Length: 417
Ligand code: EPZ
Image 1: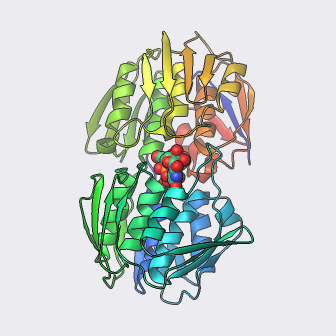
Image 2 (image 1 turned 135 degrees about the vertical axis):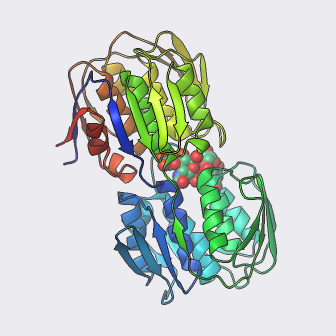
């Protein structure tokens, strides 16, 4: 069942419920390590990355059970901070266990984290910030050993608003002696959700949602019952699926207050987006309009995780668009398969492409190479004439609970095979 088969050309109709956020759930699950009490994390998506994080927590000695509406975690018996294997090398978010374990155990040994091949993805900002907090890093046999005899608060200026580095500093700082000030912090809604979870556990954090976070450390944290917010990237994916097919849909529980930049682009493409208590209504035009420029940026800018989907939509738009990817240097891997479907895309360099809209795409056999690029190929398949087959869909299932079922609920002719 690692392939997806699509017959395109259907305008999506109806409603679908948006799953919990992958990029909020993962650091929050890591945060459950910071207390000996039980936490209950609701609305976690049933995706490969969450199963990977659960296995990692269990390998550390946590008691983890998935119950009806959430995951119950108790970390009172964790014994050591040593992690290795596919769950680390295959998943970037394993890195946020570094800050949490340093906060809890003061020592961690782990392999270098992997994740989607969308760029170099160095971890220098994580290492330099944690070193300022008193952590000593050594490398042995390709593994990182981190040791903090005494974790102390620090004044940290991030040169890049890194989501992962901000989360790691937060997870360490709530347990550190003294105050930590992070300047240039990431403002993504997933960072905000982590801050609220830690606050529910008794942490003291000010400036939540801003680029200046102030943490008062050294508090004994307790367990919490916390609801993971809906996934703005999944909501954005289905929004662009509606725009791509001239659809009319309701995205139930879509976190539209976190999606301003995305809604602006969808509206420029000719869609009407109406926010309501039940979610987001999207009424798309028959054919997407081109937007002249699209530039990704840290939140609240246009998310890099939706760049491939917007690119796919723009392949059949009326006009041309210049897309600039400012976050990652290898995030145009969908260009080749889209060209095979008949798209007209010119690659200027690692960060820029120009898309000239064509009337129609035709179906093709393609391979998913990473999570969001894979989802973009699904959108292209929905738009294309005829049949498309996407193989290696394990990447897509890392972030989407059930993309085929969700799109079928909206009338798409799509199955996993
Ligand atoms: C998070 O990755 C998300 N992953 C990514 O989503 C998302 O694309 C990214 O943030 C940007 O929004 C999770 O939350 C699990 P960064 P992260 O650190 O934390 C550079 C998806 O599809 N950098 O904000 O790894 C880095 O190379 C995934 O769900 C350094 O130079 O991203 C990049 O250019 C893909 N040194 C930029 O910062 C560092 O130490 C932003 O990366 C760290 C990062």
